[in-house]
Image (cartoon, rainbow, N blue to C red; front, side, top):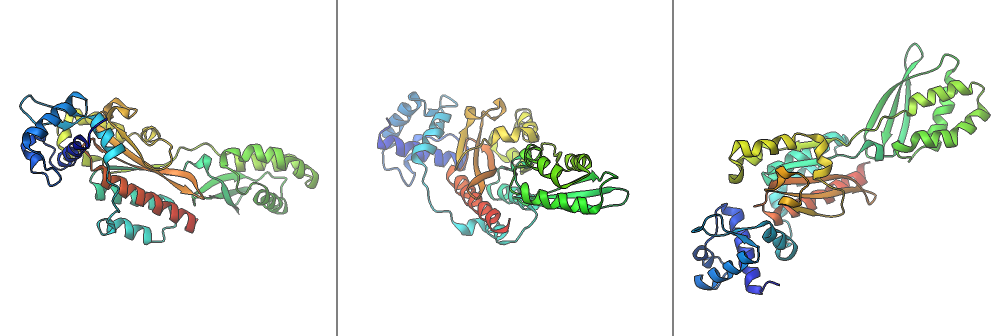
Length: 340
C-alpha cells in the first residue's frame, strides 16, 4: 500500500512526464505546484517507488519515468475525474449538434474529430450488420424478373440485394410476401432472419399461396444475407510519429501496419461497458507494449452497438482522453436513440 506522500509524488511524475516526455528528477519535482517536500525526501520516496515497481530509471544518472505498473495504479487510483471543459471540444460539440442520417459519414467524422482533438490515433468500430435488426423492408421491381431488395436496419444501415423473381410469380404474390416479411421479421437480427423465415413463414405461405415453391425460392434469395464484419474507421495513424517514443521508424513500422488491419480492431477495442484502459502489455498485440488503448462503447436502447477508442503512448493524458471518450460515447448513443 502506498503512502499518501508516495501517491502524490507518483501522480506528479505521471503528469510531468506526460507533458515533457523526459525523465523527472527530484529537484524538478520539488518545484511542482503540488509537491511541498524537500528534494532529499522526494529522492528517497522515488527510490522506494522504483523498488516497488511503480517507476523506472532509464539511465543511472537520469530521473525516473512511470512504469506500466505505475500508470495502472495512476489510472485506477489517482486519476482526477474533472468535468470536461466543453470549450476544448468544440468540434465534437458541433459534430453532434448536426443531424447526420448517414451512419457511415457520422462515424468517419467522429474518428477524424477524435484524432484531431487528442493528437493520437482514433478508431471507431461501427455496428456489426449481423447483430442489427431489420426495421424496414422494401422491394423495387426491375425488368426481366429481377428486383432490388432494400433492408433498413435499426442503426440506419441500408443493405441492397439483387433478387430474382421466379417466372411463375406475379406481383400480387410478391406484394403478399413483402407484407408477411414486414409483419413477421421486423426487429429480427439479420443473423436470424433465415431461420425465423423457415420456422414461421413457410407454413403460412403454403396455406395462402398456390406457387409455394416459387415463393420459397424468392425468399431464399431475399434473406440470404452474408455475415459482414463491423466497419472500422481509423484516423490520425501518423499522429503516433509525432510522439518522442516513436521517432524510430523501424520501431513504429509494425505498429502502423497493425493499425491498418481492420480485422485487428475488435481485439484492440474489446466489448465492454463503460471506459476501459489497457496499458502496454495488457494489450493483445506485442507491438502495443509501449502503447495505451482507451476505449468505450456506444449504445442503442441500452444495448452496445459499436465502440470507439484512442491509441497512443503509455505517456498519455489519461484524464483528458477518458473524458473525451466518455462525452463522445454519450453523444453517439443519444444520436442513435434520437435519429434512428
